[in-house]
Length: 202
Image (tube, rainbow, N blue to C red; front, side, top):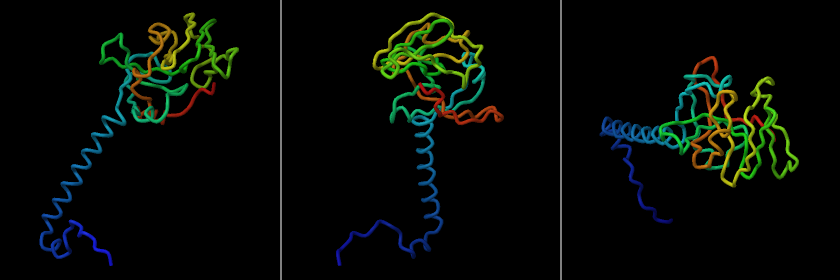
């Protein structure tokens, strides 16, 4: 039979001899591991975010509590329709913005007549964006825009189109400015919702 090095474990008789010592040692380990897990989740995977302002109304309101997923975009690129938290180099580093991704890298975005048109490989002639799942038909996207994104840029808009500071004014958003996507709405209780889902098909 092969020889194996003995594991560094307490024998049953040791467990009986030092029950409190073993209990508190294991409890300490669990607490330490738990603390590391909480810190990792809090600072590297999920972060809380409180909505400020009205730029995403009627879908997101002032003081709503969101959980931001910072892991997904390490596994895949942002997608059209994702609701993202971002920073912008032209503002204070403490300022965060909540916006919706409308245009993807290498696409041409044209806003005219109150509507958004997307040009890409699949739609060389352009296709109007269907935003009926989250915007009322009466909401128009003001501001004539014609911009072609580079390979690491995104075009973002606020759902409250008449009152949103977004890519129509500050330009395309580079990938490194995107902090994460809104994953879950935790407050108020009557609006609890998992947000990580696709809204736009084009």
